Length: 375
Ligand SMILES: [Zn+2]
Ligand SMILES: [Zn+2]
Image (cartoon, rainbow, N blue to C red):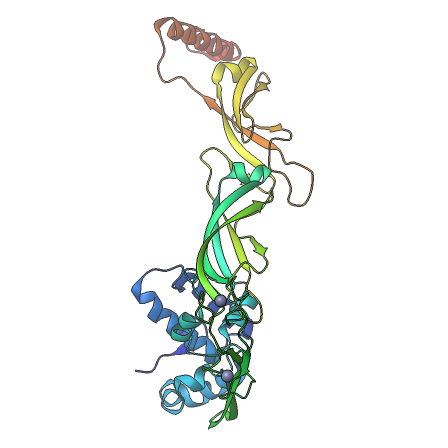
């Protein structure tokens, strides 16, 4: 049975282009094979892409609405559906950059995204997610990560030829690097441009292929990369390391480091401030005194508790928060008072508590005396 693309994207039939895009983006983030390791996810992703390729294009959507799912699917091939769609550009525009396990993505794009071609032969950008604790975020950190990517070949500088070997014009594409094919379809006459398979889009090849990369220009390499994480980054933020992605004859892709903020056992983040509970014994809350609090950077610190402090009171500890991104100021820590009540009392403590209670009761009783039963 033909798929209903609106159902696939989970949207209404009258959804706007913005809503369609938004729905697609959410689904990509959920089902992309890089994120979702379920075998079903690949199939699901294929459906999602297909639905978006149609509904995301005003023209194709009109056709789809007019024909209905069944007829549309009979009329149009997968090739028709994906024509003119460059998922790489779409992903980039949406801010979705995905690491395909560090390999050049062409083959994966080919199988997952319906075989559309890239117009330029630039390398794929890579997304690397990095987990950071609040301590690292508070003052910035240096992290060493291991990235598996297609690295520009050092022997031939990415040109693909043995040193000294001369480039020859590709006969198949006549040096253009592309093959153009004209086709008629329901969408009119369409030119499909594909990368020349003979020269890999370069337009030339070398008499002798580079021994290191077999003429590909890039070699799959695992590299250690030092990343400077600035203080104050937030969850989901991406740092771009230019040209550190996959090799491409027209330029290397970028490496994006996506920040994933780990939940902290003690602190909750609120912008540049951090919030923590501070346990205060009930007698300190009543009488006043000093108690230790955790701080994000400096370990423990003592703070003053005023007499008569109530549970839930917020105490500001200046400068113990997170350093602002691109700015010198540092946020604060907010200690929220949690009053500790004793669960068990010694005999002496109980006697004191009872006495405390009796005094309290009698004070309360003073006003009632004249109306009381025992008066
Ligand atoms: Zn080489
Ligand atoms: Zn060629």
